[in-house]
Amino acid sequence: MRVIIQRVSEASVSINGKTKSSIGLGLLILLGIEDADTIDDIEWLSAKITNLRIFNDENNVMNLSVKEVKGDIIIVSQFTLHASTKKGNRPSYIKSAKPEIAIPLYEKMILQLQIDLGKPIQTGEFGADMKVRLINDGPVTIGMDSKDRE
Image 1 (cartoon, one colour):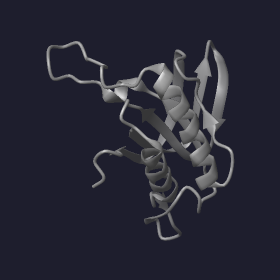
Image 2 (cartoon, one colour):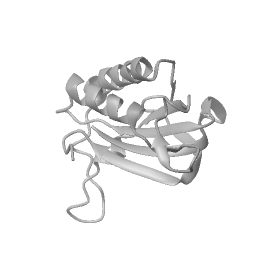
Image 3 (spheres, rainbow, N blue to C red):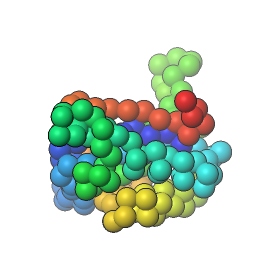
């Protein structure tokens, strides 16, 4: 699994001109799923995301997690995170999981994030044409891959 984590002061997802989800302070997570992903990847990423100390403390130092600032999370499925640009100019998405594999893993990731955060999270809609708006706070943007646990 690959994620792009963005610290936001606000974010929203709209589908067909209607707002599906919106948050204030928190994290916008873009999630890419591949066939080899498992519950272990979900548990590891969710724990990392919810405990990642990227929010400012009283001394303006990034020392607090989304849980500690009582922030929210909005997660959006994004198969293009597994794009390969090795050959030519048209990206290949062959590593991205097909919906029959990706949807159950996406749903498990949502549930795991809710457990680890201790409250409901907001979502996009799998496979929909979404418009994502955000105000990246900082900016702070971090990429992680559960297959490359640095």
